[in-house]
Image (cartoon, rainbow, N blue to C red; front, top):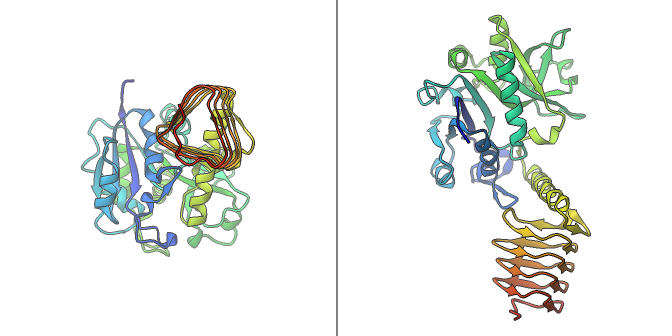
Length: 341
């Protein structure tokens, strides 16, 4: 697939994530078998951008090491002076050919590639200077609010800590993902002050600056609000893990796999499961495992790097690591790492 030679992507990954209560960089916390930033990059790469730049800061060596194999560039934000300052750090590294900069956070592992692609397409078609992804929440607490005029045109984004009581009643929130014309972006960022509750350079202020300059600002309203929610705590990390696990399970069921209790089944990406196979509750399958057609795995089975033939029956609570099972093999419950011819 050819590259979009006019699109550059900037991923914010410099933060510590104080609400995680951890010394580890937030984007390195794992869910569904990978650091959360890997999920973000996995959904960015299908856009085939000209370049992907990840902004690093806290524990930058560990973050950079984790990015090996993705073919991304990195920029260091030496001081944590806000999201606007972070993006400004990329100015010298953004390609001269770039026309649109897609900006998103490394802590949004649920974002889908198709949503990003549609947003970029809409942005370029509309001719907007800035397009911001929004969604509506029943409880918008902790999120920036989208301020619109009487014609539903975006006027500004107000962070909750800076919002009035009236503005806090708005349930349309900032999804933290932007498409911005390069020719506007960096000049605008240099004009943003720090007169806010955090004393930081807010990336969100590019919206009000664009409006004030008479440039068009659009919004891309995403109906699946779950997809844009950031991970800021261990509770949200667990919720995002569950969401990705269920996505994977729905894909498998659409391909002909049955599950007694999809909420409790964890099948790692890369594992293949054949049609008409039944997975019981509490199943965990990882590594390079391959499961054939018409198998039955009873409750609590754990498989790692196993190759299972067709028509195999594995009893409850078996634990197998690196085991190959021939067609129609039968394993008794509680078998541990036993190889069967």
